[in-house]
Image (cartoon, rainbow over all chains, first blue to last red; front, side):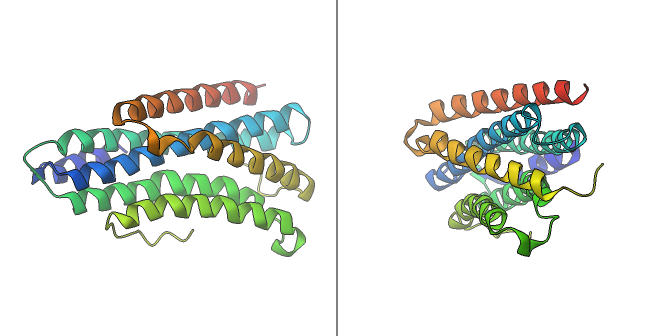
Length: 163
Length: 63
């Protein structure tokens, strides 16, 4: 994971320039980070509440907690890379598109994949058996797509992650 | 790690996740109106809260 951050920093250091467009894009990335942290806390609380109410088994709770740990770790990596990118963007020359492409890819690989692993736990039952579950999963995916859309508006090529 | 989840468990979680996401959306709706400095501070606090909650879950998972 540290190699990913080092690679990002090396790429950022080639050309650096500060410009308002870069700052706006990094702001959107920062808003994404805050949203995913909020959702993370809420999901973990939901797991705890379900476990304490006896709605899920301790084994399932352990599985979910392991998944949310992965999600937290991925979000931490993304935030570290974003903080470094924000610092470097203030320097004289900056390859904005390349930096944002890398942030977008990091977001997909570290954060989105981990978040989807959580929702896919619910998808293990037959899809035809519960419209409620499908609707809820769809709303979660829409949230993720909205965040990825923020990167897209900044002119970033999205990864081919299947959301 | 368990591979399957019962319908009952899935429905229980799905309902709670729907509420969690809705509450999250409400908390996140004012982000665009914050100053840059306030947003960074809010982001850090949000992650700290998430991390603390995850630690709580991990302690419960050990029981």
